[in-house]
Amino acid sequence: MSCMNKLLNALALTAALASGLAVAQAQNPAAGGAVSGTPAPQAPSVEAPAAQQPGGIRSQNIFEVKPEASADPNYFQQSNGERMKVQPGNNAPMWRQVGQGVTGYSSLPASQAPEAGNLIQPFVKYPGSRFTNAGEAWRQVRNDWIIPYGAALLFVVLLAIAIYYFTHGPIRLHGAPTGRKIERFTPFERATHWSNATAFVVLAVSGLVMAFGQFFLLPIIGATLFGGLTYALKTIHNFVGPLFVVTLVLMFITFVRDNLPRMADFKWLAKFGGLFGGKEVPSHRFNAGEKLVFWGGVLVLGTIVAGSGLFLDKLLPGFVYTRGEMQVAHMIHGVATMLMMAMILGHIYIGTLGMTGAYAAMRHGYVDETWAREHHEYWYDDIAAGKIPAKRSAEPAPAMPVNTARVEGNPS
Image (cartoon, rainbow, N blue to C red; front, side, top):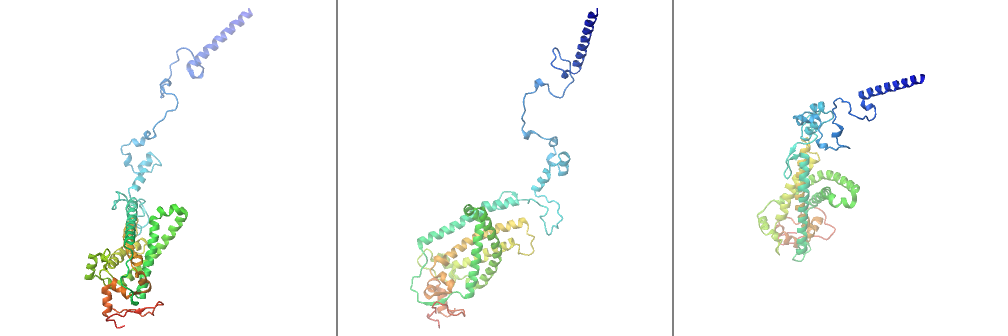
């Protein structure tokens, strides 16, 4: 009997445990293992059913991901303060205004620092540039026009000089030297010319290296040496510039009288000075070609180069020297210097290789009587007639034997 009771108690306990487990499984299906049969109804979920979701990791185009703030139709018109409310840390409106040249706040007075509140310059259109901010427009003019076309101009001039020299040779004397000398340049005139010439060469060489050195020097000597060289040349350029201006003024005062135009200059120009003929056209102390160099190169281009250079050195009073003004001055300076160098190259050629005796005249101050008669016939005639003294300075005779001219009409 006792065995039967124990068996009944065990069956009752098993039934109770089974009914309790079924109730718990119905309340929380995930708590147990897999349950056969129809699953109990579940609460609605915000996620899609697992049967409708693809497996693995899904990709998405980042440009298609937009925060809710960008859905605002006035999103791109928001101020920086409005943007900070919906997207903290997004300063796009401020930088958009900076790129458009909007002036911000600055404690510096506008009369002394008008660009203090402008990080990026406003949009402009310089000759040869696109409509863009002023800094980029200046870069386009320099890199797309001044540098390539300036280099082409200098190359063409050098090529023309080389072709003429190897096809015609230097201009030589046709007659024999007499041994009698005429003073062509006084010591003061020579000192003025050589000081101006030295300053010009220093400025030209340093300017050419700064403009074109990255193309022909940088690949050879490397960035370290090229950087040091250009820094040194820039410093020399800035200090020699004012000296060049002073010598330019002295050049004008010293030689302006003999460079005034005369009727004979038109005949000289009409025949190109006899450059392609066999006989030179008569001229006074300076021919029309030299006068063109004086008025066009020394006065006009020299004044533009000197003025823009002094501006770039910030030596002219009354200016604030804003970025835009400096950019315009640099473009003017670059164009004027290229034209001036091209013009002076012809003058250097005639004064050295192109004409026999021309370099000695500027070095020693004297020329032979035959040289004066063949190259500057009217000047020689004035000396022969006594209108101009054959020796104008009181300097002692040079070391080389020099005799003053003994020509008809000259009392010496």
